[in-house]
Image (cartoon, rainbow, N blue to C red; front, side, top):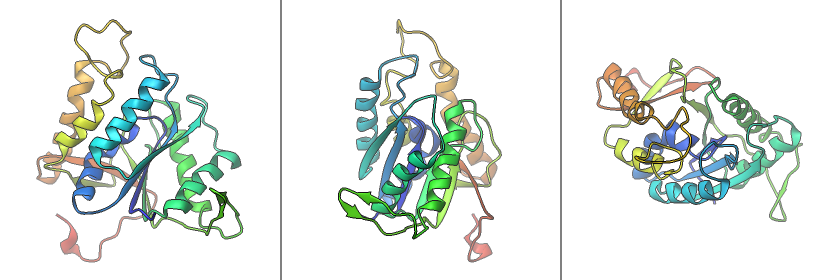
Length: 238
């Protein structure tokens, strides 16, 4: 199965928090989307890896993703080495995405920056014909995505471009809060974390509102890119 977009996250819920509205918009246009989680988020303060597994599947179903895979790398200890790169390369070659969306290049959680570089490196290496991979008993052909973009996470990184996601924020919020164990719940008895506050919950909306304000729309999501963003015509800009 070839897909249009592969969204990669170091942890389950990274993709939802970072770019779910953009993905929902593209899905509404008929684009196909898959999700790849690098870890199960087993070091998360609240919940368990098994709970996160179920929440991640529920979120993917809400979004309308074609698939969701988890490579089960070690949460908190991601390593950008050949073994990890090859596992991601196998997924890239199997699904041949044109666009890859991955973690922020720099962020509060150390796995985000490491996951960002790991995914980006794998995208490049996946295009090298002399790297041989076998997936599900099949020899794979080289494939390099046309574009690799990085969504914005905890830190307010200045975006290189933004996507108007007006009309799709509710879908994003629905996918995010499928992770019930991770976010604010009234009368919850589990420890507080940086993302369990009502402030963080509200920030998902007010960040999208602020980016939308800056481009003259209701809501937007921001991304950074590894090369100059280009348009075919100046009239492509909104």
